[in-house]
Amino acid sequence: RWYMIHWLVSEATLGCCLPTARTDYYDGKKRAREAVFGLERHQHDAVQHAIGEDVTFLKNKELMDYSLILGVLSKPLGADGRVPVFPPGGHPDQPYIVVTGKMAKAYYLGIIDFLQGWTGGKKVAHVIKFLFAPKPISTVSPSPYADQFWAAQKHRFHALADGPGKAGDRQQPGMGPQPGGYSGIV
Image (cartoon, rainbow, N blue to C red):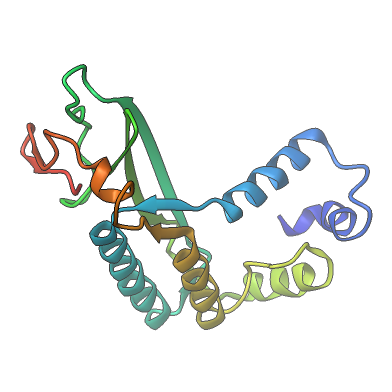
């Protein structure tokens, strides 16, 4: 928050004198910014298309300061090699299920906190963060925010390679439509 300018100055300079909660928060943001996730090619393409459309919509509405939320649920494959059933997501295509070895991971994702306009308060926060916060800063006007967000998401998800020992070997019996009235993308 802008009123914690002493934290921003400390982070931008030596990083000392910060409360443990603040350093934990900053470390978590850094880990989240660097995290990448592998999806099957068709899942990757669907996610990139959906995020691209959402970002274009938010940019056109001059909104900013939104975030990607990603939930990951891991379960072992059944004794028979079947993919376990995962709870449905908030979108018909979710969860995105990826099988690696004897584990299945379900990814649930969406964009949150998207009703932030470029207000006077955000402009003041931009100046303060520009001067004192670690880079990259996220308090920027809607168009650069959309470009920065979209660029980050393009690198966050990658398509798993097909070929011997790759995606083809991860396909397990039981993948596809799942009980519960939804179809897991696999």
